Image 1 (cartoon, rainbow, N blue to C red):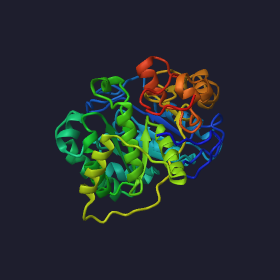
Image 2 (spheres, one colour; image 1 turned 90 degrees about the horizontal axis):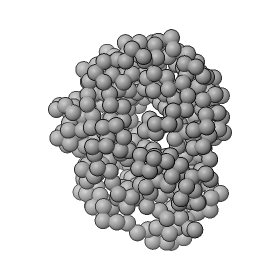
Image 3 (cartoon, one colour; image 1 turned 60 degrees about the vertical axis):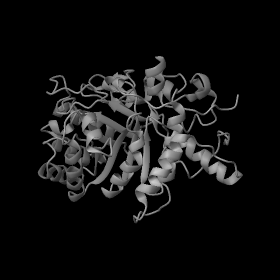
Image 4 (cartoon, rainbow, N blue to C red; image 1 turned 90 degrees about the vertical axis):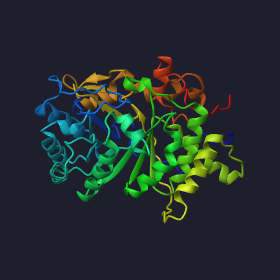
Length: 387
């Protein structure tokens, strides 16, 4: 696709962070534990069965939340993940403490026997606002194979109802691989039926157990991103490790104005036709697409692992600091790793010369996983910017 926009282009099609990204993150993901009873094939964390004694304790966790609340308002969104955060008995205490500091607290649990209506209600009463659940296939066989246990697909559908009944906003997370991509239209129908407020589609980074799975080619990723832009009129969509979704949205907007033709590949055609069949005869609401926000690793985003080590992303193993020894505000603002990722003019290859580098920047995690250089071009992006 040749349609381009100037680097200074502003558009309502993409949301821009309203604060200085060098000063504070938009979102902080805290891996409160690595313990989990599942054995997911794509797991970044290589989760373990029992909690690590080196995890941040309750008091250390409160200190971390104090540090996050020290960022200027509006404070970053805080997502407690794992492993399975429900493995921590002090989870409600941490949520309550963070809420008391004025932080917006969200949860990303695994679907295990820990996830009960009573536990969800306890966390809702403590102040948590949103819960994300993973659904990686449209069929039980696909999802259960991903998660390592039979019955997880059915349990996830039940858990989604419990989450909504408890008053949480529901987000569904789905991982796309070569073996699951054709199920996306059917999965879309399921996500709509679950009443999710947001669908987060994750493009596999070959790290951890995820090295066993097949990633999509750059052209296939491009087709999926265009398909997601199509279906984003039915529910809010975000992409994880595919920031070029924002470039696609902007290029599509420019094409509407210029009358340029958008050329798609065969995967897009198959997904589009399958979506037509899946949604035929169904009442599906249509709404203005929710604009994606220009967050990227180290640029509005920060990940804290279970031992308090800070990274630009959970999929980019460049350690930026340790909250046990350094204030989290200082790590985000001053770490050389974080600062380099906020300077896209320093990116190599086509990412460095791309006119969308400020709003996209490419997946730094994919660049590192494939090339060993976090500042290299994103190999999952098919766009070749002008030279």
